[in-house]
Amino acid sequence: MVGEVRSGGCACGAARYEIKDEPIFVNNCHCRQCQQQTGSTSVLNMFVEMEKLALVSGETTRHVVKAGSGGDHVIVRCALCGTALWSHYPRLGELGAGVRVGTLDNPADIRPDAVIYTAEKMEWLALPPGIPAFEANYNPAELLPPDRFARLKALAAKARPA
Ligand SMILES: [Zn+2]
Ligand SMILES: [Zn+2]
Image 1: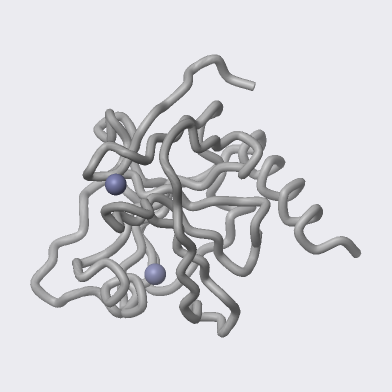
Image 2: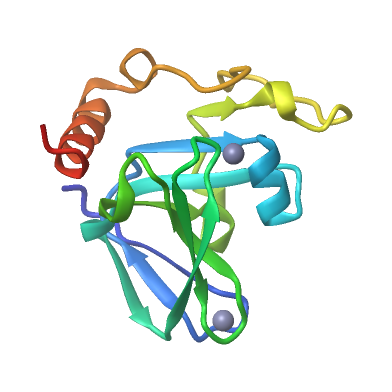
């Protein structure tokens, strides 16, 4: 485990969280669902094991929507102000969390590993240079460094025992 602890929270300040490791991967997703759920161009999510993410103050509410794959996507929000803090997606379920990078206290040091679902992006939006972009999703085995792919594999195995 890496030493750095990242902290973040909601807009009203009631809900605060800490993340005790580097991200497994960071996606900037431009799919239609992410556009609709955020009301914006895309979402920027930093994925970590849920055991490395802790709510340290405040309370949250859970909101279930359908994921692109058809499974349940659970959005966890501050119970007071409604800011979306992280999501559980069907593939990793409750064992993994995609934390909204914009809610970190220092979001600037997180860069996306990939821009995904560019086929659905808003037409006027230019893609960032130097970051791999994909029309849909990508194969994490090909994109992620081995240590981070190993964390993803371990988490996926736990989420879907054979
Ligand atoms: Zn709040
Ligand atoms: Zn998306």
